[in-house]
Length: 269
Ligand SMILES: [Zn+2]
Image (cartoon, rainbow, N blue to C red; front, side, top):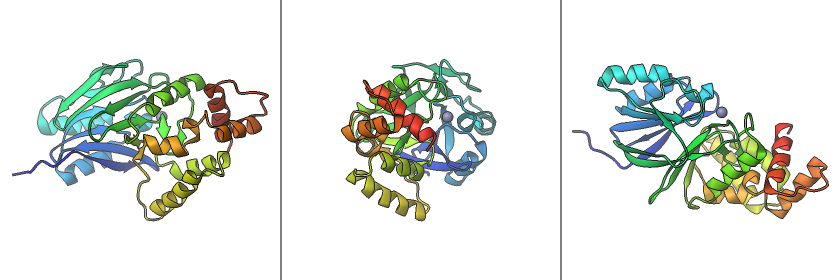
């Protein structure tokens, strides 16, 4: 007999630096943003897990490219349709449930419930999945990274600022499951913005040690990002001063102007 374990969240590495997160209870599993089916199928087989759902944050191929193969693998072994949740306003292969702000997504196996946030910026239809409770969890796709944020491919700095503000309002202990291991290069930039941020200096040492041991730097937490992530600190005097200096703008009248300036700086960093 298989014994169910408490809910676990595991990173499945894919491509060069993607993480496909797997949420499971020892028997049933959800995966978030399977850009590649191969490593997910290998993980499910190794852990003897049954796939019960796929969650998608946005339409980019490195988040959606494995959906179709994963569905044919999973559905052939259980003879049941595996639901695919994704943003309503983007084209997602195999999507069965189109989600918008405020929607709830509930699973019984593994037992977890998410609320949906619309977080435009990286893409226009980007959504995030938040599970409240004793150990709150956020699956944020390419919106927020450890010590950084996603590139603004489709959205505006104002949209990204509002999206990150939604995350900043979550419980500080919320574990944040980002989809790329970009942390060390993000830290290098964050230190250019805030060279005197003691939390950031300490985090830089710790993150380098983790990577030297080939350990993921994720998940992070909302509280931690509010201390070290320049994109969640656009109201801080040192961040504003650095943004003014680098942009050459005479004034940056809002948080969105500051975020726009540091995002443009990061893009050429
Ligand atoms: Zn993306």
